[in-house]
Length: 557
Image (tube, rainbow, N blue to C red):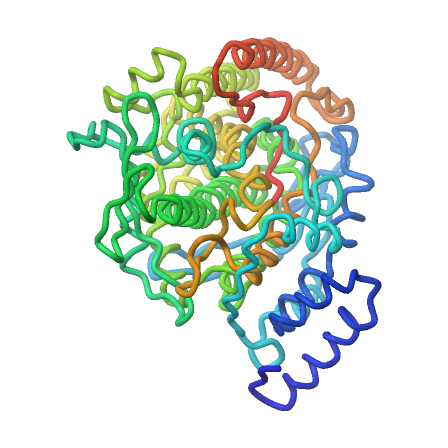
């Protein structure tokens, strides 16, 4: 057993005995867990029961109640609008040179960030207790991986969430293509500003940003460039590390696809999912609505459903994915200084507040949209417009409150939070306020459903993950696979579904028009869900992510 100090040796022995030797795990599972000899990994993968328990009694729309929303404020009288500001715990984080943030230390419905939670978080990242111990063991057998995961209860329907996708193995060229045109990777295709003039076709996903990073000793660099033809089929993958370009059927093609999948998944997890969705859109909206808007203010009333439990979730996401020796750092192959570089890049390139319906695409992507072959853009725009109409309706009913002193303080604080990003929120106008609110709601519901439904990508080591070994880059190594399963399990904790009535909030204690506006929004969501489902039956490749019936009202991890 590898050990760096006597204390770590003791921790290793205790965890090995309690989590493996004294457990009722299958002998096969025990044998493979002993091979990686890393206390952190073993400790983490024994947490499945906690994830399973957390989904047994999920919150519902009925749990959002007017009388419970008061964080950051205290009552000064019996009237609905009688509030004064109160103190609220704030936790500051410096993530990268340009990226710092503040996360509230307590939640309207889930209490304060406790001293015990802080101690546990620090302890599990303590290198003296649980050092960074890298392993490069590759199973090379999906059936074996599935047996071990099932034995550890990291299977769909237990610790892992269920997928609604079918026939998505990510191994065939067709399934690989689906990642980028009908899956999470569509956000990368959408970023392509110019049509490629390459012989390999008009579409390119360039992951060169990953090539200049520093990787730990056992792991290979993940920079690649992926080409697709006009029929959305992969035609070439360039490996920046070797300088070689692979084409379908050539020696090395399968490993090249694995390189591309893993690099794309790592980047999108750190950038679009963690940084843009959780730490920027959701966290800024939650923080600034709490600090600047009284619980009775119409704009806070609008955002309350969409920030439900967000502080709790974003604190957990930060602690498990951002710091040195966090689970993300341990499961990826990057040195921590380079993970910081990824966060810096993520912040500076952020466009999450750019109104989705107003985004432009290159002519090749636009042609796909016109042919209903890129639903990320077409269905995303349709949903965004429904959200924007909802926000306009809400704003029209709340009158002067939409631009009063509290509203302006909220808008300017959110705007300040985007300073230094690729897309900075413009100066206040009524239209810009509507766009900011719409972008928040769109991001924490529909966009998060796409970028946060990760179980398909991490279910087996042959699919995707966060690193590849130098020794065998054909699939994600066993240690990283186990840790990635823990991250996937954290996404299983559900929020209330969006297409619900929220009977104890809208119009309850607040103005009656809230109920009318919400019910109108709900009706449009039902109609859009029916359209998405009908379109999916006609399309050759399924795309279920932007069905409003699948949206939660706020971010889960």
